[in-house]
Length: 423
Image 1: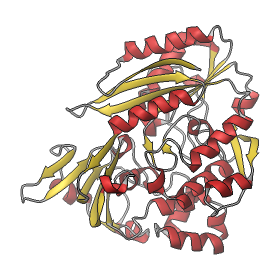
Image 2: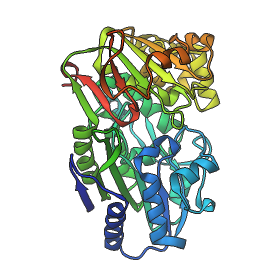
Image 3: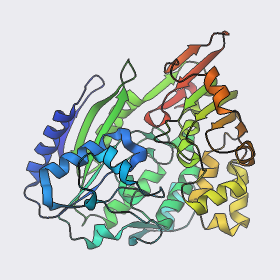
Image 4: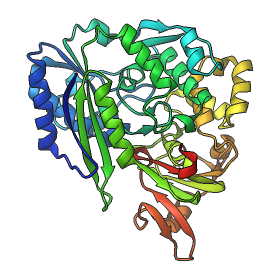
């Protein structure tokens, strides 16, 4: 059921428009006694989910009893991050999702379905796991809020991913990420229908229909001046609102380039990117546009770790970003990777498969640490002087020495591809 739909490539929705859309949808839902909101965490600050959550609290007041940021494997939000993202929404409403301890299993997708979706490469069962609050909280409304945007694991972010990964557990997160990596990231990105999404949809249709989930989804893009604008808002309880949002996102978040890019410079906002677990969006979102033998330079002033989870950080440091074939071999013989397939998937995702070079310019990690995970290293201040984010514009730039580069100011907001690589 579609409760609200508004969006187009040139549309701009302001806070009063978001409030109007929410109010219209909430009125259609009728009176609710107990509400749970599930927004993304601070790493999706630009989604406008913080504003939508605050507006939800202003509407429901004491009936909004809990806010559970969809952390997935990310670290818990700080008090300052909560205040920055959610404004005056009461701090006492926020809960912390522990992906290793706080989950219950709704049901199990059979191995035969995984085998089919993986084209015969995998045959394990997949547990649909969610935070126990969703099941035990006795809510008559669960609001999943967030942004639909191209994504490396699920093709297009949000919809039931926000529930099954954002509030998910080890098996659900690890095995679905590994499915996406084995199937092939470049076959998934930008596609609303793909094997990982079909697994999530199977779980939603078979195990989660009793949960009163309503999806509130934005589509965000830059305008000509580089300012973020809300292009769409879609609210509903099924795939229709997701497909509408995904279609608009492809129009405003996907840039097709005419020729493969020889040199790409990506800037990672220090408020958003502190790990390669997140910062490797610089690789994921640009890889289909980069030429064979090309170069990716990542300016990462806040980079201090590889994985936000300590166990995953240790695995990245141990094995490095070594590509699909090597990771598949390691999974077969290494129990620590076999038991952490999400980390194994990340090692695949973060490799260029030897097709182009990746140079990280970190704020806090050393040359030895960066090279230890199979990236190249360059000194941040030196590279920032050469490629100044304050002076570069998104897209093509010609440097003072005549060098031509392609600049991306925020990889989380888009997807770039050479036209012959996206079929």
